[in-house]
Image 1 (cartoon, rainbow, N blue to C red):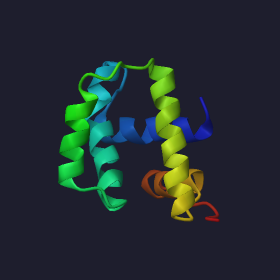
Image 2 (tube, rainbow, N blue to C red):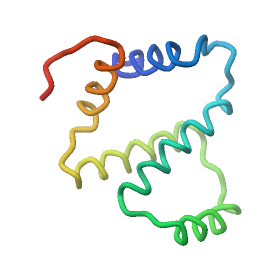
Image 3 (cartoon, one colour):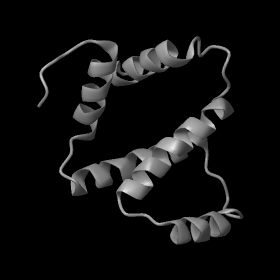
Length: 105
């Protein structure tokens, strides 16, 4: 795992306890909450969300690695359009939360 991923797992374990007992499906709700936060802050609305949920219900499910890649690509584009370095933004939060201040670019 990358340094960023290790720090994210460390922070989550500090906030929620040992992650070893969790299954991947246990992360569905926290992930969806974070994704919805981003959706709405980027200008998404309830009506479009409802339509997407209805339309997406019968869509074939990709493999986990493909779905993660899709999320990362969309996150990169959203970050680019908002002039944000997505990796630096994550490090900034993790370093503050973990008490490890570092140079913020």
